Picture 1: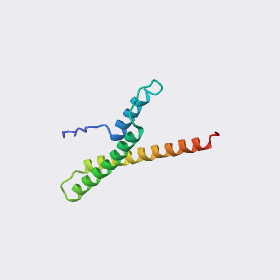
Picture 2 (picture 1 turned 120 degrees about the vertical axis):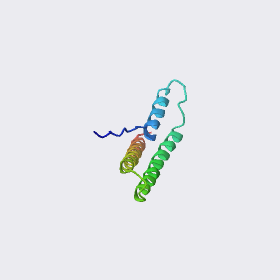
Picture 3 (picture 1 turned 30 degrees about the vertical axis):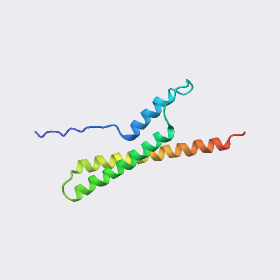
Picture 4 (picture 1 turned 135 degrees about the horizontal axis):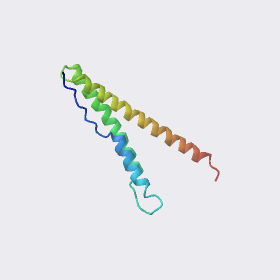
Length: 105
């Protein structure tokens, strides 16, 4: 019987950003500052970029013969999820901006 490899799941940068935004949103209206939205957004974008770089590095290791196919697939999936999250956030921000612009003053 072969050993089944264990997979260590680490929270993505997007999940960490969501947690920070959620904890900041709980303080809205109570006078408590939850942090800077721009800084949180910047950290989330940087996390997506870092995931892309990690996927590239892992793929290059596999091409050189020193990497593992499972690591490549995992890194690419994380990069894809980070990019999809960034795209979804962008779409929501644009939609919110358009809704605000439609409001009568």
